[in-house]
Image 1: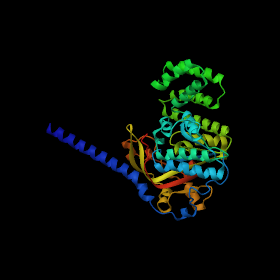
Image 2: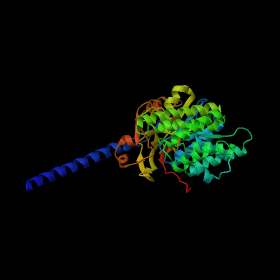
Image 3: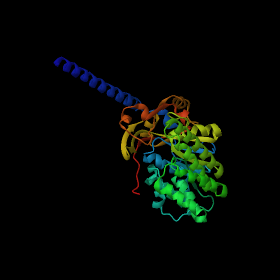
Image 4: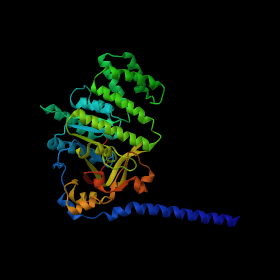
Length: 407
């Protein structure tokens, strides 16, 4: 018996040693490139640009700006900085966000002073918590002030995502109320809006039938777009148990929304979302950016973003918490010397061009964090040539957490 216990202790000790060794190996793999890429690259400063420089080499129909994470202040703030530059230099007068179309309608009415809502109420209709920030509030208020002072063109705001259609249905409901149409439908809609009834429930069938009737009766563009997005959200919900199918369908339909917005607006627009949507390559599925490139070719230009070190505010078990991570991106490390800077990959020298044509680590965090993010490299960074993903990039050395609002 004592011999068996001794053998079990040895086995247990070996197992613990093996686990510790594996953890150390994973940590080594995680941080080895961070150390290796912490060095100055002399050629970068010759081509580094500031965000208020002319960012594009020619005119484009759609200009994308990505964010390496949803949870950093710098990437949220850059959206306004880039928008200002594109308005000045490229005739951009609309921005579309990775949020629901109905939410975008509410914001658009606010920035055009066509709504009685206060800013706090506007934010109560925004479902994605990453936008409940000082940075996003600054963008909205700046657009409103711009429109108030503009005698000519007005800025517009749109949403192109379709995961949360509550505000789309609320927009349709409020339209019916204003126009005094189909009061019996309004009660049905309120059931969904107030009780959060699943798309898969039988109660929704009646609502879909009513939406089909409304679509045949009205001509209001925004209401029709909201209805279309509700039906797409229904189809998306059927794929929620298959992550790859869900992601691919979502990106295809976001691409359709972006093109619809672009055609409706009729002039260059800026779109913004996660790098993994607006860029040309993602981790597992084809991206919205890749689909856009297929459809409009060189009329799409996308700018990615990256950090060397991030303290990212990210959903952790249902609560937003800050976590530190490293991209190990050697070009992002140069921001330590240059400050925040931009590279247009169409306007760089041969040596730097060769570099961005080669695979290198870049940071990529989604909207969920668990302990594996501390150990598994592919959960926090991609390894691909930058110019396979973007036409240019903005680099930040240290990215700080979101400045969350209290409402």
